[in-house]
Length: 184
Image 1 (spheres, one colour):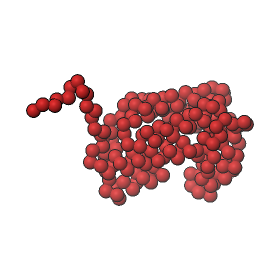
Image 2: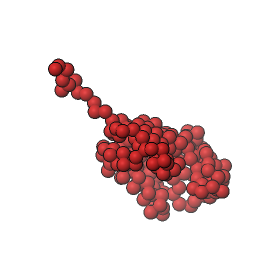
Image 3: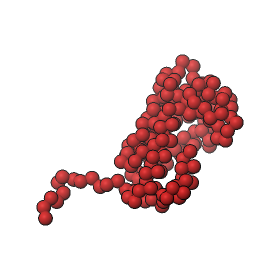
C-alpha cells in the first residue's frame, strides 16, 4: 500500500523530492532496529530461538526511539502507536507476535520449525494485538497482519501524502521563549 502511495504521488500533484527534504533525527536507530529484524527473520533464521526472540524484542527499542525522536512529522504519532502495539504483543509473548491460526492458513503460511516473528502462541497474551487479519494466499504479498500493522500503514500513508503535497515538508520550528523577539 505504501509503494502504491509513492507511485501515486506524482499523479496527485505531489513531489517525491519533498520526502528527501525531511531531516530525520538519529536515522541510525531505525536502520539498527530494522537491520536486527532482517537479520533475525531473513538472514540468520537458524539462530537459536531464544537469541532470536531477545533480538526481536530489542529491535523495537531502536525503532520506537527513532519514531519518538521524529514524532513531529505528520502521521508518525499514529505510526508510533502502531509500532508500540506490535511491541506490546511481541514482548508479552516472549519475542513472537501471536498469530491466529486461521489467519496463517488464509495467508498460506505454514508452521516453521525455526524462529518465526509471527506464529501461533499457546496461551497467547493480548492475542487481539497479534496477527489476526490476513491477506489471502491467492493475492500477491499474502501475509498476516495486526491492528498495529494497520496503524503503521495509515501513519506512513499520512506522512507520504501530507509531506509530498504541501509546500513545506519540514515542521515549523519551535519558538523558544528565551530567544523569541517580540518588539520592533
